[in-house]
Image 1 (cartoon, rainbow, N blue to C red):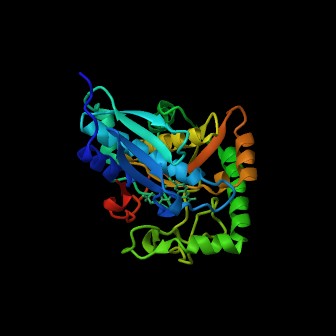
Image 2: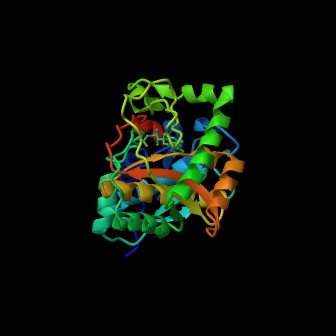
Image 3: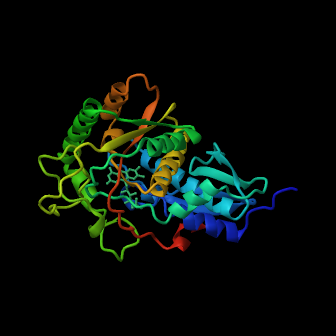
Length: 321
Ligand SMILES: Cc1cc2nc3c(=O)[nH]c(=O)nc-3n(C[C@H](O)[C@H](O)[C@H](O)COP(=O)(O)O)c2cc1C
């Protein structure tokens, strides 16, 4: 049977899930539209939160994550999508085109991932020191692999300290740039705003004993005695290539890893300073040794308080006619 073209109902389902994806500073740089019976996810050039030298990367990662959520939502309508990334060379703003594929039911694991979409929030709080069990680690690695990406878990204090050094020094360099600081604080919002980071979700300022930098956006101190876990689980998500298509695909893999973690009861946050700056990214890549390809995101994963939901703009604002 030929699949029916997607219509407004599928567009709304895809966009409702898509806008729950993570994005740098909650900038939500995506739009969704119907085009010739397909659903397209487009980058919105108005929301280009370039902070450093990796122009467009953050937008492509966020749009890829939104595509993954949209795929899950379409599966739940029994009309899974055949996805083409950057399908139109003449229009680089079209990140993905989702065409209706042969009908099938979502599997139980896919339904679990969809159920995790609304529960996944970045958590910038200290996690508990409990280690992440091997089985959960393997699920995370498999999640990245299922989307054609890789996930390297940093094992042992040597690997962790190496990453921490790169992350801290990049953070220090970025912080010394007044324009960067200004842009960062420009993304702090009240709860009522539809984008940016609400004050309650902002990380507390770092303490000298912290291993890793947090993107703090403000000056809220941490309660005494609330230190970060001494040996966090850090995972580097990467792709073999680094084209625009590879980055969108890495966004899909990122979202699959994050949702898999949420489904496994794990909290997550992202640390992207060492990914955004070319020199730091190359250093990180070299430190991974045999792993060939490009790091696209660093994740902190562990057991801890779930993050708070951050607002999203009205779904209607994400739709294009
Ligand atoms: C490309 C990219 C880079 C990000 N970098 C950071 C980061 O360095 N530090 C951080 O705390 N959150 C980072 N985030 C997470 C966003 O701030 C977060 O997704 C956004 O505020 C929405 O909140 P939510 O994840 O709870 O839905 C990043 C997200 C993306 C997609």
